[in-house]
Amino acid sequence: MIRFSLFFAAGVLVATAEPHWDIQYRYRQLDSTLTISDFAFPSATRGIACGYTTDRKDKDRPLVLVTSDAGEHWTETPVKEAGISLFFLDDSTGWMVTDKGIWTTAESGRSWSKLKQAPSGLLRIWFLDRQHGFAAGLQKRVFETLNGGETWTLLDIVKEVQGDPVYTTFGEISFSGDKGIISGWNVPPRRGGPDWMEPERAQTRRQVPHYGVLLQTTDGGKKWTKSDASVFGQVTRISLAPQGAGLGLVEFKDVFEYPSEVMRINMHTGQSERAFREKNRAITDVRVFAGSTTAMIAGYEPSGPVYNSPIPGKLKVLTSNDLQKWTEMTVDYRAVARSVLISGPDETHLWIATDTGMILKLVP
Image (cartoon, rainbow, N blue to C red; front, side, top):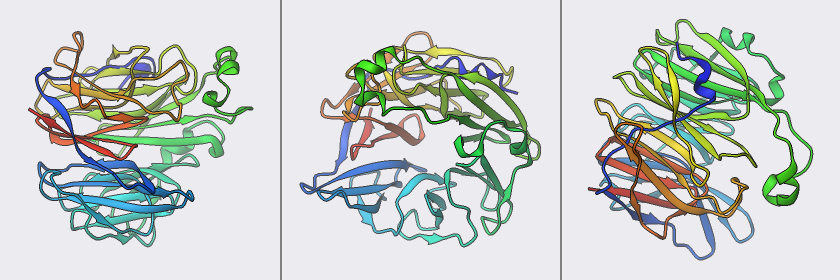
């Protein structure tokens, strides 16, 4: 079982500095902007991105982008609901979570159908095969399906989780084989607006720890264990690899000494330790790869002490093979973001998507 020190440290594994990141797609409409919420490259040629466009009247339009030629060309697919997150079992079969339910595709995102019995208020989904999957989200809820999403059952382990369901969220799911982790947190509301709107007050506002929880399984979800603690950050991203390596991303909201920490997870021993944190690097995604010592982290450069500002920062990507020496990769200078996502089938076929409507490709 992974020790709960996941909440207190963070790290990353990555590659050489010679490869670089070039912008491959950029939303260029003058009267609207594109927000990419999530994306997936389940193979070296097929990619899918979900999100929404916002016009000058602040009207949002759901959108899915698909490519079948490794990102050289992207095609818009109209959808009825904006995607929050994606999960693909292979380069054809996938699921998209929206705020109203779950949609599924068997055509690499070119067409979608809505699951009739799926719960709402979800944030993440993960399928071990086409029948067996898990979904997590708001209101202290984690579900399991054994029939491809026709019916969903609330996990019993959730009953042991403390905190008011109104403020309890499960926001990340990650598996490697039968080993899996689901992370959650309970964060009650506070008075005042976000720190970026009140920078002077934010500097003197005392940070208060909150309740964090990890649900863990080693047998494909037949049995779950819970570990919890009082923490400051939230474990928002987890990446696990079959060889027993893993990374956990801890993000700190509003004003904090560091914007994030990355932690290395040893799935064999259950040990975890901090691998990376810097005050001028707000990491938003982490990735390890099957059969490789390479790992990668990506984020942006904050413009000041308030990390969650609406102003995007320069995109930053770092790699390492030993989690001690870190190398920043060359990134197209035009790439900026407030949130960065990494996807690809292996460490040589990789793409990055930003919430500012850009998709970059790793060029060897």
